[in-house]
Length: 149
Image 1 (cartoon, helix red, strand yellow):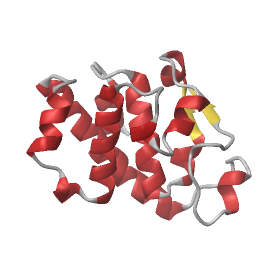
Image 2 (cartoon, rainbow, N blue to C red; image 1 turned 90 degrees about the vertical axis):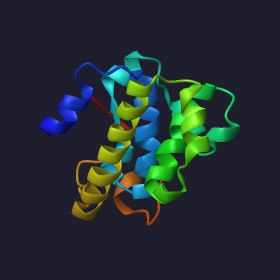
Image 3 (cartoon, one colour; image 1 turned 90 degrees about the horizontal axis):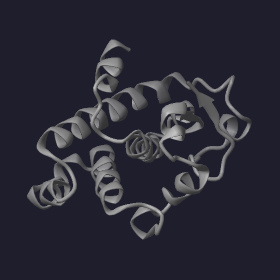
Image 4 (cartoon, helix red, strand yellow; image 1 turned 135 degrees about the horizontal axis):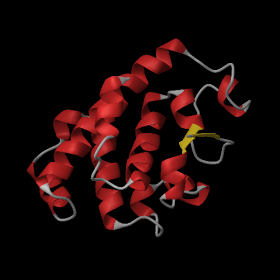
């Protein structure tokens, strides 16, 4: 948890963007607790359930910025096919982010992928909204959520 805290201290990336990436990765990890949680700092930075619903088809969403779409795509690939990430993906990220922000995004995605997969194996669902407890495959969009400070 100290590592997660260290990623957050001095974060350069917007909280809204980080939360969108986290939730999209959580879908691929099928981490129920990760999908149910909405962090207060991201909500304060403009995250709402309409944006979360955009994660179903993020590249088609009109309410996501090009920077958010690029970061979400990078997160998707980190979660599903990391070896497919190449020069073109990094060139696209460089259109929107500094080198240090790209490193921050990469480290953050690595944490989300790894911790989310571990958390999914723990199947911590007892305190989650009903929709997250029993369905075989779930998504963070269109479900009740839990706000965390």
